[in-house]
Length: 134
Image (cartoon, rainbow, N blue to C red; front, top):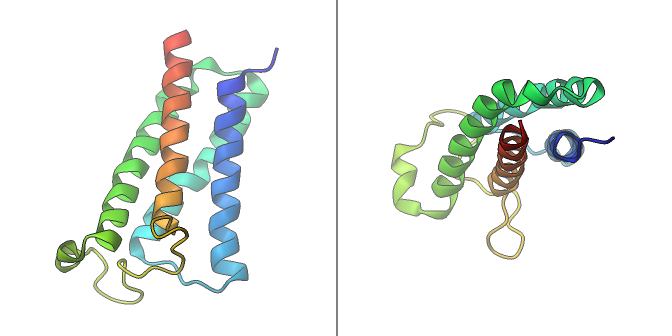
């Protein structure tokens, strides 16, 4: 039987990784410091969740939840930097691409950190469902 929370979380991580690679490699958007931190947290999830899905490992939430929750925190902070101008003086990006920059802004609120926040949140919720089942 297919473990739906594992499958959905794995697919979410794959889409998030593919999206970040599309924006940087195809569209030519240079990732800022906080984008790199989010990538560092998301990319291993593709491998961890893929192996867990293959093995139907119900205990993977122990390893995924810390990464996804930290990713949610960083994505939330990054999104706040973009949308709240007074926070920009507290930015972690001191050189290179500014973290407050918005390469995309769909519908006036969907930016790259917002998309990462949605992905990390979905993975976190699905892992909590998996934890609850166990």
